[in-house]
Length: 245
Length: 207
Image (cartoon, rainbow over all chains, first blue to last red):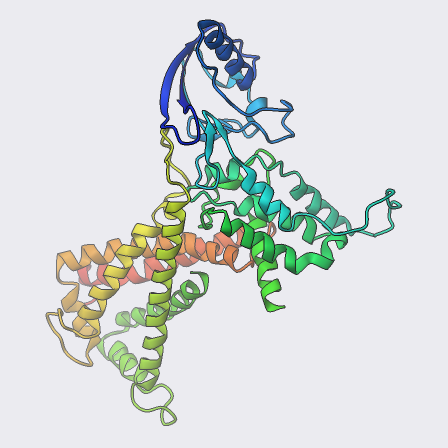
């Protein structure tokens, strides 16, 4: 496959960036999107140019490190992470636009790399349970209703990639925060901090400069892990419950 | 946004049903309008209920607008640099919430001047809404503005009702479809109900 890429190049956090055009050839349809970028970078390095910086780690769709907006869609045309997006979803001769996540709370570090530590601070404000650690507890020491376990698992799938924020026209982090709140708030282990968790995490989210939710649903459509949109309603329910005391 | 929106939605349902009385003739709707002024009597004075309702609605409109402004400011600030690759996002109803809301705010001002204060009404007969309605919808530009505003209100409710359920935490995976269906039904019923009046005047069914 021969492709034309228009990639956002930005030398540093304060540098001005722009979309730069590159041509790559010899791309196999079985390559992942990141392997395609690796091919481009090898060429750039050989030419003595700066390679395109992008985040990546596990390359098997579970770490949430890789994230870029491909043709206006977070993680590209398939509902998966960028590392699991294969070039067979593009056609020979395509022009592909590649941009970093765009949000005030996710400043660009370089090229396609953004600083997502705002998510870490949200997690730090309540995305945990306070329990004495030590040896693993006995299975079934704390009974968990099946429905609660299913809901918790569904929300625990969130890998914090930030696609929800990137896709949201308002740059809102409601889906991410709701996934984390609901995951712990439905479980008995999370019950003691149920009210303070939602209050603190929403406060932390607001402090990071994320936008407000207007229920456009773009987040849930982009989420590679399928966190459902009603999760935001569940977090709002938790928030109102906490506010009532 | 959600609470004030739902208050206004409840009012719209009552308003639309009241409007349909125009099909039962001048006496029916004029009598209904007169009765609205006597609600709560003798406990309340003449038109007191109406003024209580009006002040409640005014508060709802103002708070809804202020919330929308604050939310929009915050949302625009959260995405300072836009994507180079433009793509349509979300449904038409969702995308038009802001401009639809502005159209509706302008329409409400016009609507009150036309049919409440009668300032811009050609008939301007106090206590005769039937005659005022027929006179008002005799002007083509009023009909156009009305149709646009009613389509805007339908779209606004289509997204707004379900969105309010999300905001207030009333939605969940099981209720999602039912809430969307309710939103669409309300939007369709209100738009059709409101539009039936100018259409009836334009086609001569009501004259």
